Amino acid sequence: MTVIILTSCPPGLRGHLTQWLLEISAGVYIGHVNPRIRRRLWHRVIELSGPGRALLVYQQPGEQRLTFETHDHDWEPVDFDGITLMRRPTQRSTYNPAAPQGWSSASKRRRFARRSPNTSTTRTEQIPPS
Image 1 (tube, rainbow, N blue to C red):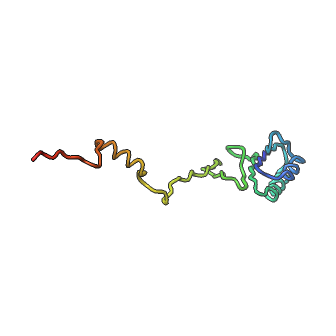
Image 2 (cartoon, rainbow, N blue to C red):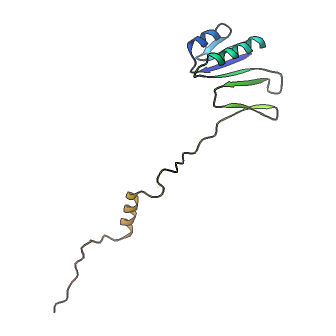
Image 3 (cartoon, rainbow, N blue to C red):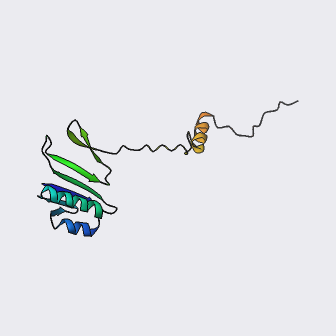
């Protein structure tokens, strides 16, 4: 069994794949083809995919009984002690060193206002009579 999953690929490629495989959902193709046809289809997918991504899953002897191939995909297949796993990309930190660090000016004013009692800037002092 062969499964090909396309994302953002041109309609011409989708039409080409329907000659050999069944489209069971948008961009998902499934069918039984021999290894020679599967290799040719995969090369055709790589040639015609343009800005899109593609994922190929097919049967292979072994513990998992299947294997993966990817094209322009963020996730990549990795062999881990004979088992193929899909490695997700790590999340990048959103830390921006150019962004100002610390408290904002408004926050500083609010904290200062809470700490000190409400005092006026012009202080009138009682002058004793002479």
